[in-house]
Amino acid sequence: MEQKNGWKAWIYLAPALIILAVFTFYPLVNTIYISFLNGYKQSLAASGVSFKFGINNYVQVFKNDYLIEGLVNTCIIAFVTVPLSTIIALLIAVGLNSIKPLRSFLQTIYFLPYVTNGIAIGMVFSMIFSVYQTGSVVNNIGLFNHLLQLFGVDVTDLTWVSTNAPKFNKMFVLCTYIIWNALPFKIMILLGALQSVNKQYYDAARVDGTSRFRVFTKITVPLISPMLLYVVVTGFIGAFKEYTSAVGIFGENLKDYGMTTMVGFIYDSLSQVWTGRAAAGALFLFVIILFITLIQFLVSKKKVHY
Image (cartoon, rainbow, N blue to C red; front, side, top):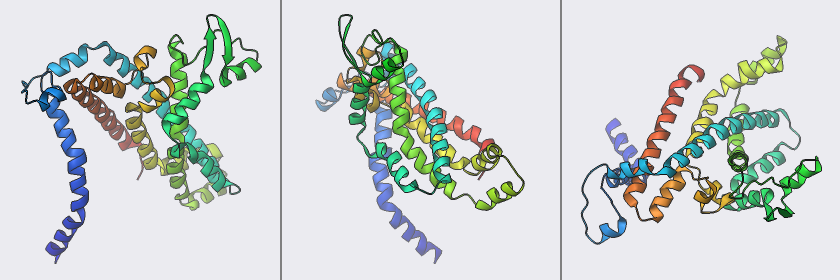
């Protein structure tokens, strides 16, 4: 009987396993294989040219100056946006969980960025922070600079998304957009976790006269820690794969702005038909993400309560 049910289980799993094999496992194995073919180009491979097996693609990737720029930018994005967006999302979720009037309406408002096109939102952010100049004369001040001007800030030379803008300003705009765009998903996950917490813990804490801060740190956070881990892990994975946000704000030529990301570096290699180098770069990014994820799981063994 158990053997019969086992075959049924495999039949039910077969469609999902086939899709995973075709669209996940095969591309991964093929990428690893291509990354070790020296000088591999898709156009040459189609014409029947054979390539030697070696590590030249990796050598060329690590020699490329834009790899360091992309890696540094990506690390800044990941280690700034993930903690901040998680903390903000947790505070908003706690606030939404504590109110009843307009909760559904506010949940809808907070969720809107998640269903909006990322490139379109990036273009809006670009317009908000844009400053149009002719020489040293400001012709049109963006919305953000206009707000600063109302508080008496001199915005004559204050630029945010132009090629000559300070790196800090450009990274500030990008990180602000990524945090704002990441909030809806995290709020939804954490709000669901908060609503599943047994209310008896809060009732007992109220009887003991426990402060709200202590309730938050000793009851709320430990009880939803599995969902917090999920949000942080997926947040870091998404942050290391950031590309569309930067393109939406700065356009396709990220190199001109000094805002290349790791995924942008990989796409640039593909656009130059260096498929082997792109595969090597993709595998390098995969190893980084895997390493960061494993560290998070190791740290979480003592911090996460199931």
